[in-house]
Amino acid sequence: MMSIDSHSPSEIREILRMKNVAVVGMSNTDGKPANFVPKYLIQNGYNVIPVNPTTKEVLGRKSYASISEIPKQVDIVDVFRRSEDVPPIVEDAIKKKRIKVIWMQTGIYNKDAERKAKENGIDVVYNRCMKVEHSMLIE
Image (cartoon, rainbow, N blue to C red; front, top):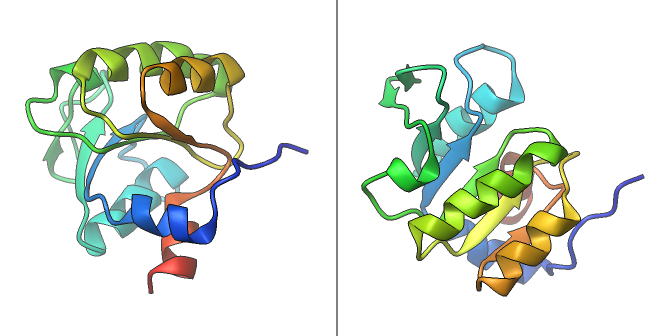
């Protein structure tokens, strides 16, 4: 069983106050977590930026091939990819600069990616769902 990070509810609440969220692996497929979680975030006032190199747009929003291509500020990188795919995502987030949090969704964790992010001043949340945390702590 995968554990979760050590953030307290108040720390997660602080993270959830950040509104610019790049969603890596965001999907156009209804019913997939990578579709309904960002949809929920949009409905709750988040500026969701899709990152998916295989599509031009998701949920009517321009999709970017990588985090570093996003012209706007990004606070949180929300990851919907397999655990082994996380290290290059963190590398790309480091290139972008000023990203505050890497958030690995439920079931996703990569120790090397966590270490690399933290070495570069980026907080890491893992094995948690932004939608679930938001509905428990904010609503």
